[in-house]
Length: 257
Ligand SMILES: [Zn+2]
Image 1 (cartoon, rainbow, N blue to C red):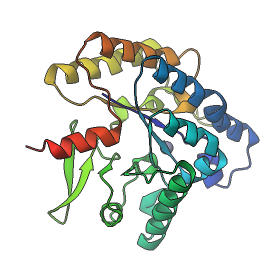
Image 2: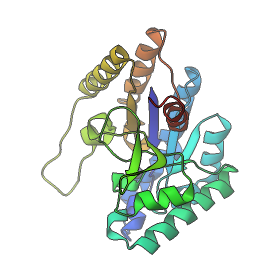
Image 3: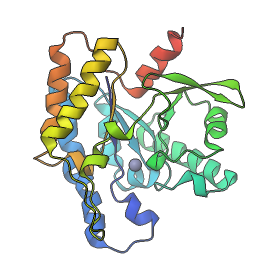
């Protein structure tokens, strides 16, 4: 089981040059309440997870990143300011990715080994840049439910994909847009049901169950229990291994069939 938390915080509003202090405050909740609540929960059940942090969020909240690493979790690259890679020219995407990795290393003392593209927006150049950076893994694509090696022009890259899916992402069920009439909303108990079915079926197959959460989405009192219930359910099985995405990618690389 691989749990991940995308600590986007205020970066979506900042990226767009937005001036809404209200929306910035929503992002700030991720730092003030979301991440501490998640870290406390993970510590209670001795579970290690992966946090994907845009460099601007890490620079805004360096102490948060140091605490995440000190508590045994992984921090991976999540863009400079949650930019969309597919609209950037190659050199700009590469520059931002390298600068983001440097910033995370400077703050946490660890060089990140994995990348989750912001909004899972993987450009035609992303893989080439990941390969050049010598990354162990990517976690932005959806071609499988288990890990697989990414190919570039048909050639193996050594970059392992730890696949994501919208169906295993809290944002899909809980996000709303204040200025659109369409506001999809799934009750928390139903989201637990979906995630638990993903976990149970993966367990049955002896396979990977990867999940994506956001501190400013899952952190609320009426939702955080979903995460706790999932962890309890997994641990009650007795043989579920929790790894960071880096752990899972390394395992997949070493056990490639
Ligand atoms: Zn994100």
